[in-house]
Length: 241
Image (cartoon, rainbow, N blue to C red):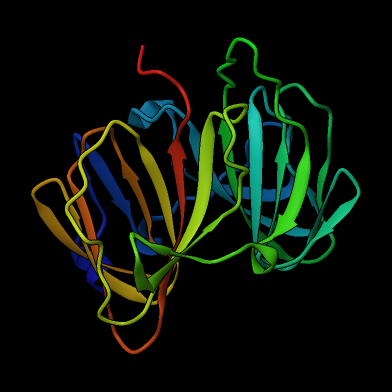
């Protein structure tokens, strides 16, 4: 009998973090979606300053409109964003208020991040762009060659958030327990490991989602025989006031 039938799950919610595992995912269509369902991982209702969901799209399925910025990352299948084709590992950034369409060309899964834009004086509003993770440069994290970071959003102050992928060789871990003002949305892409969130320790694996509030103590170590990799959102480039 599955453990979920006995009321057991790895999912957990605490005041400063959420671990959401696939056995607890609930799917529903958001307003404007066609032939598409969303697994909403976090948003204002959870205390987050952004919204993140996984869109499960049928062929010719579409997302609805958004009132904020939108970032999409293709997990499986393929989509068009403003007529640009995106396959697995590809991504797009759409500025707040820019009319656009997101349509699946086949059955697809897409990570979607949406956030109201925080303007900054004397800084231009970021423009639409697309890209592929495979074309970005991998850099070691804090000099550790066993952990590689790829930045998917340009590092300039026009952007008020960042999205990166982090890839760990088995046995690699963050060099310290982090505690900082940025909040995170994290989707496990491959592999497995152990995540410390607050005072709790969780086994995590591909398909899991984690939300971390500002100042949530956090640490990750990769386990198993395969690389562990996740997509990470954080708010960025704005003064705390």
